Image 1 (cartoon, rainbow, N blue to C red):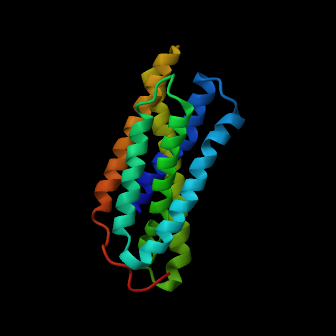
Image 2: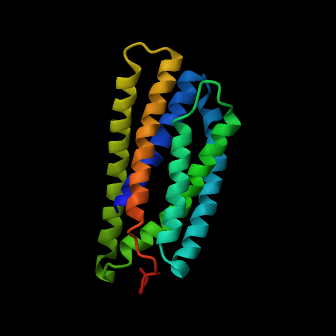
Length: 194
């Protein structure tokens, strides 16, 4: 649950703040930003397929470690953006994060729910979903505060970009904490399925 919350925080950071900076600092349209995000969504679907297939065979730890590492690398990449960073490079970083999020999601779901008795699976699923949404709200509030504090009252475009970079650096720290916690996950597949 802790790993999922931290990963969700990074995911919401990407979904909220990358479009904001592209639209406000580079004057990109919502359609252009949506098209930029499309490959990441496809890569995320591939990652989910892989994560779902391997968790029953090798357990949750390895796919979660691989996915969280990719996720952290992408968040760090977002913390290094400049006003002139090429859009294909941003799309590539989005794909790395999408793959990381995709590969980590099914194993976290299985690990979080497999130890529950069948009678509590519905409650466990609801709690997981609620905590994911709470993590997203916390991420947007926390990172929004970082951006506002770092940028100041009337930032130049460069100062605003630096403020977004600071927020993604904070998100990277969260992803590294998730990676640390993930090292404590079970190595072996669960003995029963959900």
